[in-house]
Image 1: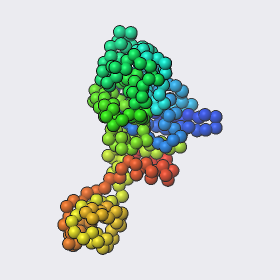
Image 2: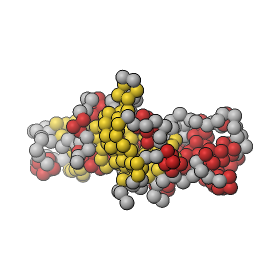
Image 3: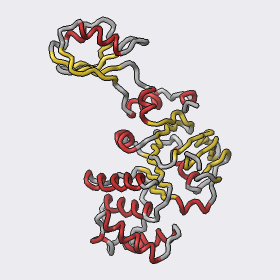
Image 4: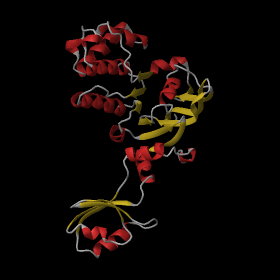
Length: 310
């Protein structure tokens, strides 16, 4: 069994003269949460449409659970698009049952799964209401149920927390974690970088149809650290500014972020700090947040050479 549940091998998709996805190769590890990131128009949605067999690649191949992607694999995928795809005049219970039966469940199994998930997400009192009677957050929870209740081994969640208040965000997040802990492979697409850092194991960044970064999150953050350190201290903060060779990025009364010269390490910083009158409480390497990395790469139109290390 491959370590990867899903693989895209040199996949390309064109629409007329527009190259939407340009020879993208990605590997989604089995049983992990994989963040698919990129600015608007980067090619994320086109990639997802090819994975879900809504459209097919012009070039390249997609491997699903060790096999070339086939139409019958769709029933083993749960796809929650950013745009809600619910029937507005249909009752909640009928809608969930109908959509689960389309995924191959029997009437009996669809009803049982529906009741189980309605209770989990606190929607049992709304089962006979129409979609138009629900708030945006409730609609989002119904759509989540239709995505996951047939227990697919691959979930693709595009902005799954859209419209949810903090309490319901926690509820849905807990279910995502539970499904993943049970072995479900999840592709998670969002513009909220803090959610990616909290939930994902691996990430891929697409820009202008090209893959420019793919790795586990810890490795990505280490790769983009730039000799920056966080210092916590007590004493006169001006002593930080007076240390020769330091680039002070941020300076507050009790903490600072500094950058040391290229080629130096923490020992260099500590040697200088010892010679001050400051009481040093903590020194730690600053790993950039994903939001910083995203802005750096996308803002500079990073070259393809930044792709995953082989």
